Length: 323
Image (cartoon, rainbow, N blue to C red; front, side, top):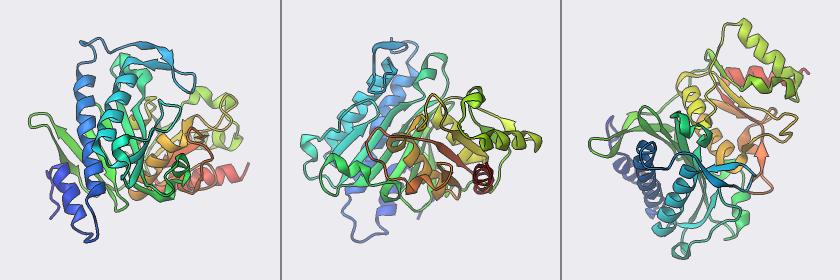
């Protein structure tokens, strides 16, 4: 029986019991993710004391400067998940190519990772996070990562903030677990999380508004202001989406003149967050359709992203259709 305060590992096992045909592979995979993020938590907490703040002196596959904690988080996740033997393939936002672990030759699942989202905020102690997305192995090639968001088996994120929280969906709603540092366990704190149908907060980087490609989007934001909405933008997707998931409203990172296909990566950020939001009763959109309906063409594909309460996304899409 699922109860408040239940440990995440026990929760995973209780959920597994609902499916007599389950082999336990997905449960072990999720436990491997939990173990890896606990290691990352310990490094994040010591970041100011352990010489892991600042730039690493190199750029990732997108040409962006890499932070030291980016590299550390990626290394921890790749090592832990490869060693688990549950993943046939791993794709990371930090790596150009898909990795096929030796121990995962019999793995049933593949996983896409954003090891440390919001890393540009690391040096100023703003909330950051880890995002993951799990699919079934189909062909056993890198093409398996192009199945599209509807085919996700599980997705989640960990937000490293004033408290550390693990949000998880396996397609049966969203549950949140808060890390109790005294015992080192993620405990169920937000059971069957549901987004409000409408909120009062919008989260966009309005500095980019002059470059937005859709005039209807600017009219939509002005309409929100007239209705008394409050602007809240952190610049860390995990933190901004987490707030939106809890309080409702809308988060957006649209296409603009600098990023005509969007800025956020579909596989590592948009798809898993869309899965979580829709499982919590909210909606996702690329401006015309659910993000879960997008079929990516390559593993580092970018896409416009809108996530939020059901009514906010409906209003947004109406404004975009009217332009």
